[in-house]
Length: 425
Image (cartoon, rainbow, N blue to C red):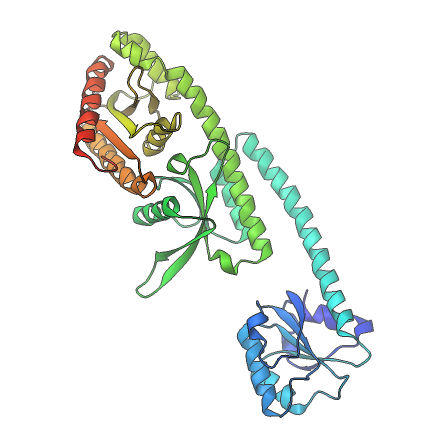
């Protein structure tokens, strides 16, 4: 509601005494007080109504108005039931650029507050209806196959925030804002994994002596686990958000939850489809291995020639949540399309086969993968607590027939990593 909207209501008979040029300033709420220093009770944007019982001397007007400005008040409404509004109050409001409205004796503060509440309630209901319709449309788009990035961008734009959906390793799932540097994403992921509760405020380093506040919220599904989950990072400090902003951010989280649930369902289907891969490798049935890799990797057409990097991983010690190691590894290799992650047969571990370009670039891509695995594992240390993640990586396999030996090499490297100790090796 604007100040001008309130003043325009005939039955209230309000009039500006100063600050009429700010008539289009919005009012968030109405608050009545006769305290001399009420700033601690203000949140910003209030129409403050007062009977001026705090005034015992002219100097009190300066103290009172300064307190209102410090608290972020939008406007002052002064009642005249005890006499005219004194010139010192008018001058103090003019000096501090605070609009001052006279409330005549025949108009109660209750009537003014009722009009403010009625207007804000109407707007709130209208916003809810509009947001509900928009939310239904975006949910339908997401369910119909639209990517999370497109839906997140539309919702974040409406909410007026920058938002990023990140994985537990700091990988960007979707973004609706400026790209975050790798160090920033990893910092956010570490703080997410170490957080004791949510929403959780984090400050990203900016210019020297400055910082950017970011709020973290978990993306929780039925089978969620922090080590293999997603979280939402939103620009701004949640402690200063309005109710509307909180609702908008909650909607962003709900979209991410839908997308994550869809992703987890697909991962379960893929895991069932590839559970026979270690047996096929052991039996040297490489034609079937090649076909399984092609179909499981969601490749379209024959594609370019490929080499492979095989890794073996385990989460220690027992007992551990079923399938958690597989889900963690899937997040570690999320940046490599076509990767197959499966339980390693009789081994109490996970086997992953990562396709890389064949030829001269295979070695460089394999090194990039190793660096990413190492960085992701370091990030996960914040959430491992009493557990350990051990990973072994084999040399690049140049053809499908070499995958059996690469799997053996990766398992051996994992066992050596286990002997070296440390939370993530």
